Amino acid sequence: MLAIVKDDYDAMSAEAASLVADRMQKKPNLVLGLATGSTPLGLYRELIRLHRDEGLDFSKVTTFNLDEYVGLPPNHEQSYRRFMGDNLFSQVNLDPRFVFLPNGMANDIEAHCDWYEQQIGAAGGIDLQVLGIGSNGHIAFNEPGSSLGSRTRVKTLTRETREDNARFFASPDEVPRYAITMGIGTIMEARELILLATGENKADAVRAASEGPLTAMVPASMLQMHRKAYVILDRAAASKLSGEYVHTYHAASLVRRPR
Ligand code: GLP
Image (spheres, rainbow, N blue to C red):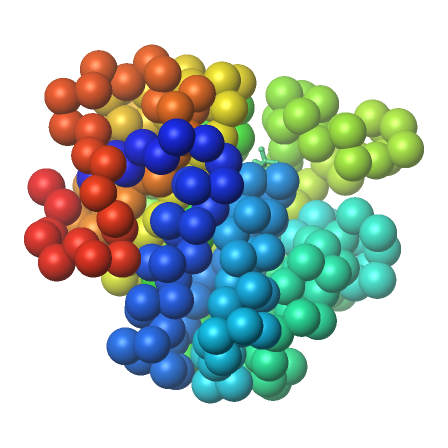
């Protein structure tokens, strides 16, 4: 795992965008894993700018989103499909045939989860997966206690996660109780991972993930087992790291394999 600390949110987002753009240039048909939440918004804004101003081409890229709330129709204001449509898909030249998200309205959710895994496999696996981190250390919607080998499935959201995400809904009661999420095993098969975190309220989770014991109670700690995991942080999110291995160089120019 390689921690890269930037001064602020914008610098962190630009760093992540330059890494994603670098991989897209090297492999135009990149299979890109995407995340929702407030954290990657700056990354998506920068990718949109690179597309608009510098011709970054998404036409051959395939995307897979990490997760989706169960029971929200795709056009619901808080569905992750809507979020991605508003904040990225509608503003770059992705081919809709190559855009995948779990469907929170699937009739047979279990079969749908199997299908989602098959689509990832058929695309050749995920090259680069973007991740955020929950304040309780979750990745995607793999809440504490999730099996470290898990695949795409339904998870019950914890109270903490529902409270964290309540800010987007009219009332806390409206936050769905269940979500479909890629599993930790699914995420770990991506060839490269970028975990983004911003702000002081993520500092404990970042420290537990990066320096704490490997444990299902902190799903993000599993990144310690990945050979190419970049943790891109702003100073506030990095403030509780011991700092010994923290680097400040540009992720896009990384040729060294992280330790
Ligand atoms: C949700 C998402 C996660 C995301 C997390 C943090 O629970 N399922 O993928 O990492 O929120 O969100 P934020 O970036 O808004 O703090």
